Length: 206
Image (tube, rainbow, N blue to C red; front, side, top):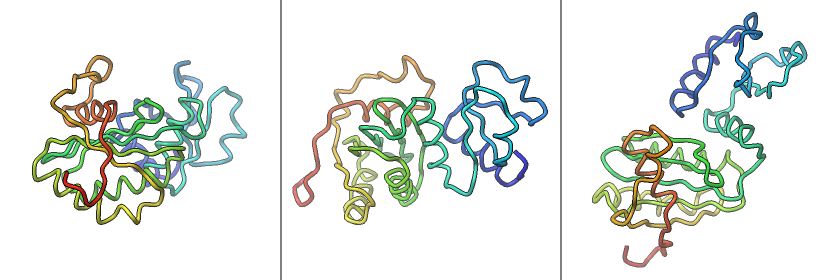
């Protein structure tokens, strides 16, 4: 990565979205382990210089969410997903898990609901899918109410039509903890994303 700003942005995004990576110079590419599948570069000419089996992603000015989606799509061999599910665990810290056809592709936490709403809009914009569902845990008290009010206000302006469902958290079992090391808020969001919910009908009592 030649551009210091892009290098910093890339490392920050990879850590933020819990993706494992190796930071290496072009001169040391021959030292990469065979387990590496994707190479991230900011110089298009590097692709022509390489004679390897790496899948190459060009790091440009795209938002981090779009870059992470490109990486995850390549890892799963998909150009788009059939089902995109955003699971949200409301609370003082909002845990968020995004699933593409059941695979965890992005996880985050938010302290500000407005930042969460912006993130949802970005995900719906940058992650192509046939069907989009936002699943929210019924727990969270006032934090759930704040989130629902924000969603209702912004729902008609979302870039793509999405269903919003509420999930009863009292019947959830911890599925994600078996295979992943998510923090407690993200783990709860993952379990919510995997669970059946009840579609919200705006105007009815929630």
